[in-house]
Image 1 (cartoon, rainbow, N blue to C red):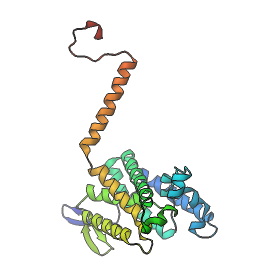
Image 2 (image 1 turned 45 degrees about the vertical axis):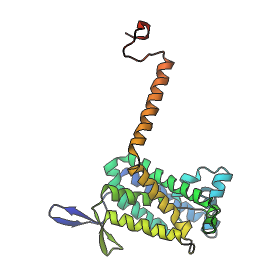
Image 3 (image 1 turned 180 degrees about the vertical axis):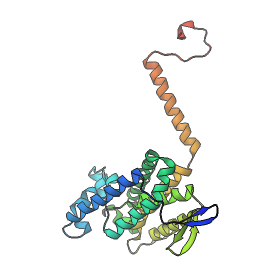
Image 4 (image 1 turned 30 degrees about the vertical axis):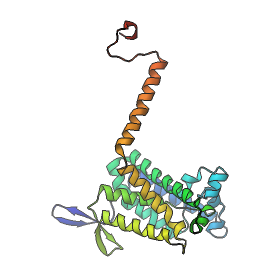
Length: 254
């Protein structure tokens, strides 16, 4: 990864030290992976923890395993899966947490992760042969949230330069477009497990885009209406009347 500096381009690898939320996420994912390895009797799909905590639309919808929409983010299939996700979490997440703050970053991370999981559940209900396997196969991994971080990093730092495939320097916004295009094309492929592996990636990016670049005025209007409703309810509860011109002196509080 490289960054622009006043005297030219300064080459660095990664954002530096680990921020608080990233540290906790790294510890949690690595700890869960260690537990998963020791609980694995014969392959990932046979692991009892994957069946309980991985996101299986069938179990999520019919068995009431609602926790899976969050817990699937902490399960990974192998060391490579874990390594790449945690590396991306550190590379893209630290800068975002420093810019947004720990609370806002954590909210965004889980929002995109949960959104990615819900998109997988919704797609699994479509009457298409290519996505039928989604309904009964467990989805695991933080990739949906990671793709959401990639999108956010490209929006916040669009002109940062990243070495794509460690060879080709490209702006962050181009990198995000390429990653989204790869995920889309893979999801459209019926072979090689494409839909199973890539729909969550796309879902994380789409949810992140809506959250960061969606109808801001609509969100603010909803917040205003909710706040106004709460204030009106408190007024009625404590018998407080609104101020303003009123001929009825009894409705004024002094």
